[in-house]
Length: 259
Image (spheres, rainbow, N blue to C red):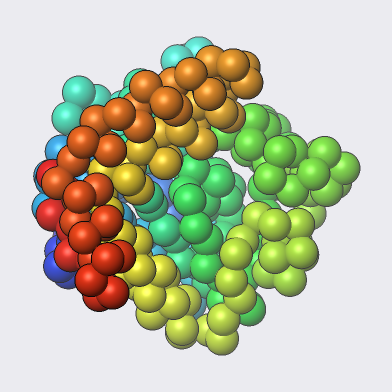
């Protein structure tokens, strides 16, 4: 059975994890399928944004540890392949267009870590987050140790990482880890609302913005500033930039083509 279904709605790529009978446990096959979908997002000029969501009451209860333990114990990073983008954003190039996630119910281990590699996060109010690796004899290796202290604050992150205890959707929202709380069942619709707003914007501007924020995250201030202005030149010379000015003068909504 295909556990990851990928579809396109206009300029939006929808990635749907469909393994509810196993609480959407992450297998290597699901990891690779998501990676291939993100490569498609990067490569297809018609795609401007993606939404990731999952079937059932729970986004995920975690990984299939018996399948992943040998991989984690090898000393190598996640096994991303040439035709994939690492869903955890740790190995090789990352997704270059915005990724929005919608979560509900259990959002454990890899669910938290893939969430931390997205740009906008929508959570149902019943969402429970947990990084329980220290209770299983190991520690997180999908990005939580790198990103959660920055996203949630040093003390908040270590409170949950060092104990393996759960935290609520309300706590995640208060910490700034998620951007919207909605009633259960509404998380995908809200994510698609954001996706459509992004898809309506100028694609080159959106992608340039994401590159700039990523550069600021990893490089020093002067490098980030210099790169920002270098990357701005081709955007300013684009057809979309001219359309933006024209639509402003004509007082109408701009229609962007990604050129």
